[in-house]
Length: 261
Image (cartoon, rainbow, N blue to C red; front, side, top):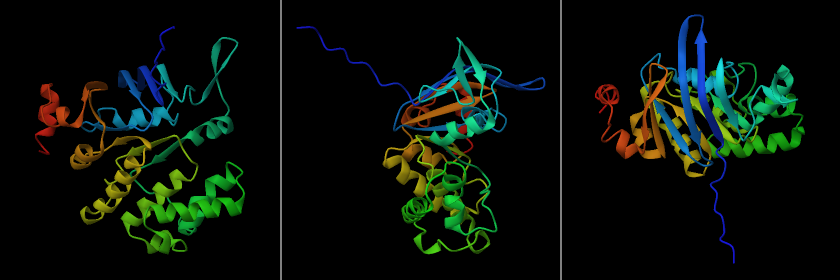
């Protein structure tokens, strides 16, 4: 009998030697990172370390200068044609991004739309989903983030924490394979941070693949499968939360964490 071969599943995110510069400022200097299906990776680091730029490169909000980023084996914004990568149209790229949900620091909700209208806008307007199905899914998502009673409320009638939870539901409405969070609690009053982090912990517990840029060390300790520390456009250190947060090996990581722990 032949031996069975056991191969690890392909990662949802595969980044290799990623470089990005703005004019002469080199922001990313050779990032290598894999993120497995169902994994929650928290990215820590000082301001200017490249964390948010890396997130924006994953879904092609910023084009990388060199290297490769694949999501589910596909480079967002590009397609292989005749042995080379060709840039896709903005519409084709938008359709590719359906596999990626992103939540920003600012909620970016449409002020003239109710919570449920904000959530169904992309599924109906961009992806052509039937309105009845999109509304039903939106109601389920509002219940999932604890806001089923706020479906008909406008953003101005919601607290900052509630608006961010609507933004999370909106990102989930396209049924993404990957969720990106760019400092989702940084614009919130301190007393509202907990409700958003609780929603994110629930997503992590349900197996959503997530990359989270945050300074919330408690969230990293409790919800992350892996912590990545970035500085100067490099990944300086990565590992289990207990190792990186409890016993960091790099002096730059230790100096950064000393401000929080």
